[in-house]
Image 1 (cartoon, rainbow, N blue to C red):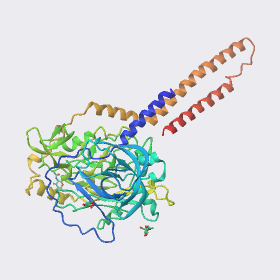
Image 2: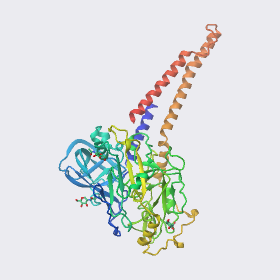
Image 3: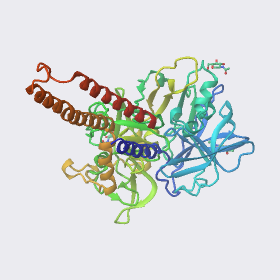
Length: 536
Ligand SMILES: *[C@@H]1O[C@H](CO)[C@@H](O)[C@H](O)[C@H]1NC(C)=O
Ligand SMILES: *[C@@H]1O[C@H](CO)[C@@H](O)[C@H](O)[C@H]1NC(C)=O
Ligand SMILES: *[C@@H]1O[C@H](CO)[C@@H](O)[C@H](O)[C@H]1NC(C)=O
């Protein structure tokens, strides 16, 4: 029994590791003609502030520069992971001789752990650990052609694989190292992302450390969304995640999209979401994606992309609710014209960006329902407060939290959509744009692999309960066997002996045999807990 249980746990751990790897753009499209962002020039990069400019590559990647070992390197900003890796050569670096591999939804970064001096904005970190990746051919996308040569993970420090491997504070993530340098400043980071092809978008995105982008101070009064900690086995699985409100996803017909969370600890009617700037397309349950696009006239399932396509003229309004606030999604983010897709009639169509969650992103441990990637994150100015995710500081920094300030005004977004997609003529009220009745909603095909994963998730997400159940079963069965073997036999013997007049008959059983039974089962429980503890 014990070896079976330990195999079960090892299986769980390998799933945990693969579900941890949930970052990076899943679909990077070919270069397409994107309307140039004729955005008003932002006067926000005011003096005295450290605003790190964030480059937008066709709404598919958000990139900032770091300087590492003397070389300036464009890196992808990824709130869904916690490690730094770069490719190419670094002039001044120390190879620590520890090979490591970091996996992502689009491939693995393999190399040696190195350390070098890092500059990020105004901050300098000595001996920053990072992975120097020699070979990037294992990625399914051409990273350098996409304009970046590395990735900086901005997730919680506990999620850092390098830190785990090095088992040394020098292995801490970049932001943890920065926050540890000054324990009196607040330890938060904020991100503002631009939208290409939207005449109203900010002209440049920014990232800040421990300060707020000027003009966006209202974020301080937004509700503090607590970071849910649903990881089952290891802190490596911790992400920037929280719950929506009850009925917190409003579909295109203005009604909440009904969906039962797969997260066992999710409060009724709420959904667990991860904010991940490394995903181009938000990953949502299939039923949710169908509810958003399946009632659009002319909607078609695209097998190649594993996503819906709809006519580009179709305006869809959806919104999310967090902490009692409503966050509308810009219709230009609900469908994307950047992918150059044609439907079965040869017409150019737009891609439904809220994609059914891919099998590489699905949470087998049942830790979250959705990954809200860039098409969501463009609609909010986001503040991530690391609180006591940051260790090795003398002060208690409180619980981590997330604040979201909406940057999308539904009315202005409607006007922008009419201008960009409908050449200025508002046809969004036409009969051809009306949603089909709910009874005529189309449903996308579910793969065998997904069905299998759903089943596995149901088991794996409840493993503590199953473990306790198994244990109780073992104890009861052992108890019955021991009772039957010893107690019943002894009683029979006693009864026989008593019948023969050898013993007194007032005794219900041997107390000493009970004590042994109770003692040995407690020992079993303790050793099983130890075993569990070791695996974690
Ligand atoms: C990164 O640095 C290069 C070279 O100095 C510059 O051309 C580019 O605009 C910078 N990118 C960002 C996002 O700041
Ligand atoms: C630490 O942060 C505080 C508040 O932002 C700032 O006033 C102080 O100068 C910083 N100290 C150092 C050593 O950078
Ligand atoms: C979407 O929302 C905008 C702004 O609230 C509104 O003007 C428009 O009629 C809505 N469109 C649809 C199709 O619901």
